[in-house]
Amino acid sequence: MSLTAEQLAADVAEVLFLEPAELDHRLDLREQGMDSVRTMELVDRWRRAGVPGISYIALAEDRRLERWIEVVRELQPGADPAATDLRIRTCIATVSLGGALTDKLDAVAAAGFDAVELLDADLADSGLSAAEVAARCADLGVTIDHYQPFRRAEGVSAAEFDRVLDRFRGELDVMAGLGTTSILVVSNTDDDADPDRDRSAAQLRTLAETAAERGMTVTYEALAWGTRIGRFAEAWDVVRRADHPGLSVTVDTFHLISRGEGADALDGIPAEKIGLAQVADAPMLSTGLEQTDLKQWSRNHRCLPGEGEFDLHTPLRALLATGYRGPLSLEIFNPELRAQPPREVAARGAAALTGLMDDLAAVAEPV
Image (cartoon, rainbow, N blue to C red; front, top):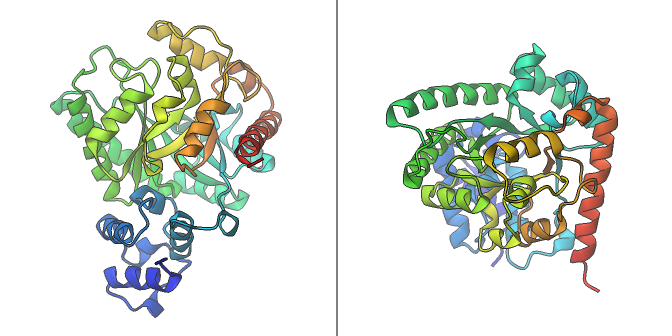
């Protein structure tokens, strides 16, 4: 039997020790007493009630009850796709554009993107507070979906990890000011990274637990030049071992393709464990490069979809086949693009991403 909006509201009210009539469907549930423990209680309850695809991450993206009702409706078996909004959100990393952060945000909004991934250096260089950036994004109608990157987070000694946690809590404070709830953690690229994956998994789990205390989530990305974790399959293995509902893996088309991984790397991964999908094209140089060459390839030669030689359609079709309905985000490291007017690049990026999404939708339509 399908869960109704009334039943969902009653379940939420019960864990908050409220009456359903006392709930404000448009107010962030954290302001009404919701926390990570109660959220996971609801996830378990709704899974047992017949919504296997529901997850902590799906609920953490938007904590208004009206949105939770929509999410459950979309994920219920037998849901009518025509009756639900499954439109993929479009996003762009601020590192993809040149200029001041305010110019970048204006360009993103003018191009019609739904959201940004905010680079920590862009915020630091802007001279604006996190709250000021959040207010500007709100005025522009753009959300901050992810804050990134957090480096040297795993594969470190126990003594250093105490300092990692201190840094991490500081970043969570920044995120609270920005009004965003997801942080992108990248694999360790230093020579002294510990090869013990169980250690990395335990450290990522601790970060996820720390974030969950603030109602936030962590998504983990394997950088192609990562010392011990440089492939998507390796990142997924660590996330799987960590086994925390607030920890997911990031799919980045550049890192996937540059390391020679195919769409089958996504086989069997639950949609709720994929926190972000980053899209970039590039010229096909080689898939057997050394770490330093992989980094230079990524940092200088990424380009907009359709302007390179990567097959983006195959891995993205596999991604959507998992049921992933999070954002598709352009992350284009390219000094030539950053030297161009941000509005022009953002407009080209939006057109390229929309065209790519249209291609994927056309392939998915029955004939």
